[in-house]
Image 1 (spheres, one colour):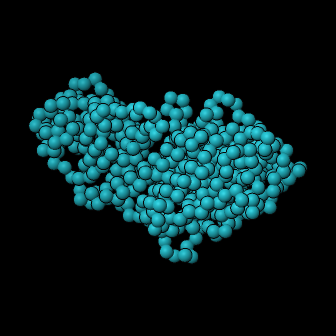
Image 2: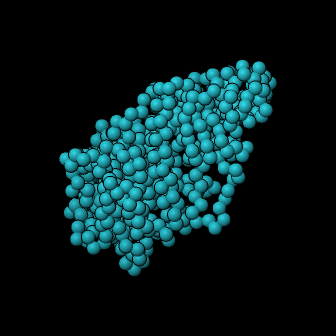
Amino acid sequence: MKFSIKIYNLETQCTDCLIVGIFESRRLSFIAEKLDIISNGYIRSIVNYSAIQWKIGQSLLLHNIPNVNSKSILLVGCGKTGETNIKKYKMIINKVIHALKDAGITEAIYCLIEVPVHVKEYNAYWKIRHIIETTHDELYRFQNLKTKKETSSPLLRKIALNLSTRDEVTIGTYAIQHSLAVVAGVKIAKDLGNMPPNICNSIYLNLQAHKLAEIYSDTITIDSIRQKEMQELGMNAYLAVNRSSKNEPIMSVIKYQGNKDTYLRPIILIGKGVTFDSGGISLKPATNMDEMKYDMCGAASVCGIMKTVAELNLPLNIIGIMAGCENMPGSHAYCPGEVINTMSGQTIEILNTDAEGRLILCDTLTYVERFKPDIVIDIATLTGSCVVALGHHYSGLLSNYKPLVKELMIAAEQSGDHIWRLPITDEYQTQLDSNIADMTNIGGRYAGTITAACFLERFTRKYHWAHLDIAGTAWKSKKNKGATGRPVPLLSQFLINRSKLKKT
């Protein structure tokens, strides 16, 4: 898919399709008005006499428009004037893509930058970002393992964005650069998440890290922490989870140095990478267990984010860690009732082997202390409780540092990759009390997302930390089953903001 930006003379422009907005009041957008004048009132006559109410996403494709060189014009409903927010704007783009695909259109000019979005500071930059990112998301298909590829012929392959001023063209250049880097990262996260567990194990994740290092050899290096070194480090919780798997656990450490200041403390991203989670001895029910291949989506998102970071050459120092392993039942599996000594020296009484992600993360969170991080963010498909609390729309956010929370919330609003903050307090910490060890690995039935974060927080007291529970947002089920690539847009935007890259 190719994107371009330009100030077009629309009456003389020849393309497959011009896309313009119509509002529920039957008010034409500015470009639609211009085209109506050129066509001697043709467009307004269609709008006025059609039964379409022009709600968001309703559309009508016109052909043979008088005095217009383009082959067609797609009129798309933009809802009520003054009520368009980011979500509705992305819905409009989604509907446009479906209409273009259904009509077999290969090239189009978007004249939708002018549609007002009533969010503070939502200018042409953000509209272009969301057009490109939403378009790629809508067109994504995972066909890596199909012997017969699904094709819709012809394919949509070129989209041009019509802008009104030269200043917008400058802004648009940055928007395209940033959004293409983000979608490249999202694609990696989706592809990794969708890979089956017989292919995508810890070794496969490590291979993806090395591919990044080959492409971006000037800024990325890789350390691979394997089982023997984990044993020497005392990462017993991490190793316990993988104990009954035939696949070796590997912690892939991706070091990106975009800033030559060696004293600059790194930002650390940790992704849970359980390439298949059977639940271990505390075996999961068979229904939908196939979806437990998605338990490595945290690690997949880290790989995707590092791709975005390297593409943009951000002036930051970032360490991305894919904590890869597998949770399987068997004669060597760790068991409920065991007490495990962690890398930090704290002990854990195992009550449920299906609460394995926090065991991997707790040792990884201790491991990263050596880097003296500025901040640490872990990303994990950690708890079903998060799905109960927030559904599939918002990822859960828990943190020990308010300024970091504020930064993440801003990035979430900008990217449309939404999060919701949950508390961590001493009242919840008591649910992890154990008579046998320093803590249990589950906190009971209630507030499961919070108690899981409380568990992790005990291993993060030497630095500023945030936890993203993406159990409800990392993949979709049923008919649309597949990885979503979240929270790559959120964390990519967070890092772009930290870099203070020009965007206005």
